[in-house]
Structure formats: structure tokens, C-alpha cells
Length: 127
Image 1 (spheres, rainbow, N blue to C red):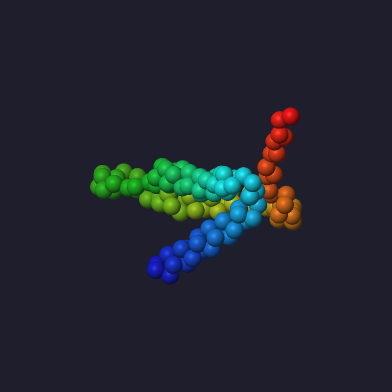
Image 2: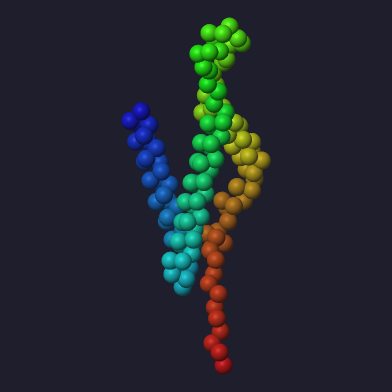
């Protein structure tokens, strides 16, 4: 468990540093930190809100069995852990989406870094 947590922390830290370096490279210096902040905010929101949805879905997909089901001689309840259902569901969805958009991802990866930058709008001085 400790090794898993350490690995996750190291991987998240490396991704954070890598994305921060990419954002700093494509941000226009004339705009200051505004574009850099926007990119970082969008990245943080994109990684945060799905967690809430997955946790809510996991709770809804979990089926618990009470003692009264077995005691009354009724149909036996088979407990289902929503964690494993969500893992199977989202792993399948992720693999399907990856193969569906793999060519587009390759095209995006081959773009020059300059194409990711948003140039600052230059205002003309009033005459």
C-alpha cells in the first residue's frame, strides 16, 4: 500500500511539473501569467469534477445485503461493490475512446509547439 501511494505521488508530481513546463512554454509573455493561470485552472477543473461524479456513481452501483434477506429465507442477495463496477465500466470506455481518437491524438502530438500558443492581440495606438 505504501509503495502504491508513493508511486502515485511521484507520478502525479511528474505530470504536474511536465504540464507546468508545457504551459509556461506556450504562454505568451506579453499576456503575463493570465494565460498560464487559465491553462492551469482548466487542468485542475478537468481533473477534479469527474472524481465527484465517479464517487456518486460508485455509491449508486454498490448493492449491500442485509441480514434480513437471508434470515427470512428470501432470495439471496449477492453484494456488489460499485468500485469494481466503475473500474470495469471506465476502463472499457477509456480503451474504446482511445482507439476511436488515436489518429487524432497522433496528429495533435505532431503539431509544433507554436501551434499551441495563443498570440496576444496587439492594439494599434490611436492616431
